[in-house]
Length: 277
Image 1 (tube, rainbow, N blue to C red):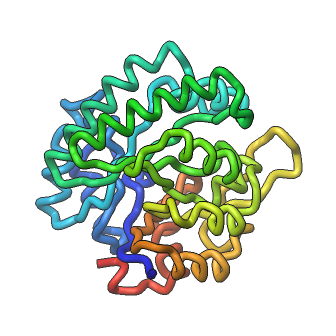
Image 2 (image 1 turned 120 degrees about the horizontal axis):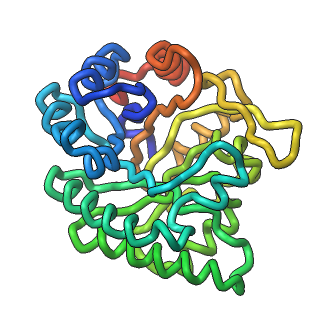
Image 3 (image 1 turned 90 degrees about the vertical axis):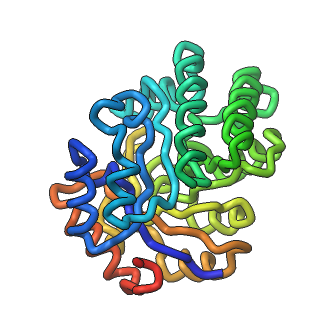
């Protein structure tokens, strides 16, 4: 089935308050966003009015995003250590934040929240993996109780490992936010093969591009959509066969002119009015 709508990730625009976010979204020409919800919980005095401001401006909120506490993206090793639900020291705070985000999402009709759950150990027998599985069940149940689904963003593990984790969690409201660039950035496999494998579980797409690294153990490099290693014709061809209609959200986390890069991504995709509106 085709993409339903195209939006952008609110954090890509690097704005300092809800009104400047609204203005920047309007500048891109898009009318839909995936909204970073962690600032609404942690900085309510600055970001608490985000949903109201976006709604008043007739900007559709396609989904929410939870950024777990204490993440350090300075290197692959640091994010493997600090990312997602993995660290014991941040789990209580992340559970509390998940409850707040789920409540906010339900109150405002947002039916999907995504996150990086953290690097999943490959071996099913790894005791740390069972801990993360239990935490995922808890987080998914928190959201399901109020009618919100959860999608795990790809990249920090292979598609095979992510499929095993989803099977182990055993929750119908858990799916995948598929980001093809992240598979390249983290060196976790071919994004086309990964999308084919994960397709039945995909609830949302991120539109992002990257080139792989030549130095094992280091990041790849994010680049404007259409200029990297993602095979977009193959990618979009598989998207057309997904078992459900999904939203596609342009994410740009590098570059000095995010608005122009988002506009370029939209042009690359064809700028379909039905998607963008």
